[in-house]
Length: 511
Image (cartoon, rainbow, N blue to C red; front, top):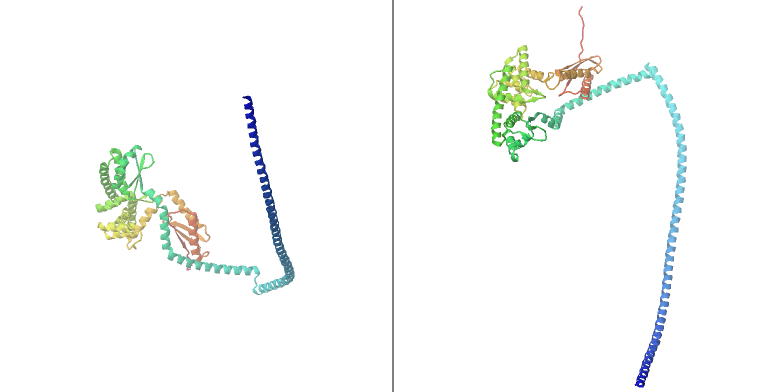
């Protein structure tokens, strides 16, 4: 058993050894074959590398040759450019040398000419002095005397020429004065209309508390819309405490709105129906007030018997002011002044009294009817049967119609007196006197003025000059200079007329 096992082991070992021998032999053959192939591949790679090396060397040599050729070309061009620059510089230096020589020659020539000119100048000065001495000997005047004489003559001629030119310019300015004045006035009124309108078109109504503002406005603004629609005035409710503002150009409508709103606030019941009732009552009350005011003014002026409707229109002047002067009081005052003047000069007192009373009648309607208040007032008076002489006083009181009667002229004078008297139009007596004194002081500050007078309530200054000091042309120039100084130094309403009076009196005595 053991022997058989041993034999088996021996046989197995022999078989394994045979197999190993076969495998090792096959691997040796493969290794030999691989080695030969590797040697061949290596030989091929070495051959290719040598070939590539030769090609790269050849290319490098060709590139080196090309770069050298390019560098040689650039160097040649640079050398040529440097040569050209050197030639240009040499030419410039040559030109500069030539110019320097020319400048030196010119300087030498100028020096010589300066010396020659200086000599000629000295000779001319000597000749001039000799001529001056000869002229002084012949004219029997010194040089200074002759100069003063010539300057005085030139100044006189220049002044006369300037005055003639001034007169021509003034004549030309007068031709275009009306058109330019209208344009200037329109621009000025456009600029200041807001301030003036704010003073003359607004009425403030006090209220007990700010809670009342909500009640005046009403639900969704129905109360305020109803009030504005019925009165024609704007109701302004803002942050002003305990007050609302009524705005409108018609003073009568504004008064109706004020009375109605005041009554509604006192009653406390504010709704559209109640507003309509209050406005109707306010209209009747204001109309009655207008009629009563007109009648009272007519009685005060001594003009009874006027048409009731005319008195109603005339009473509207109670709510109209001009430069702070109530127009109804102004009309009564003008009527009284006109009656006094008419009585003194023997004119028709009744026509002057009534014409002066109604002269501003158109101001009650000038915001409703197109036209000037003088022409509107004349048309209204004519419609109510006012006699023609009184109507003429109304339409001519601003000289839009040429006054043809003494009573019309009296109306113009009385209107000016009432409007221009001290204190009538927002001006105190002290300030009025100061303005007149300042006006006369400006006129008296000019040489040649003998005395001056401010007349027409400061609307005109009349200046008396000494005729031996100021001629006719000088009087015109003096009037212009005084006007300019008044414009620059004084503040005044409207315009001021400057009149310069020059008169020559010859006095002799019979013995």
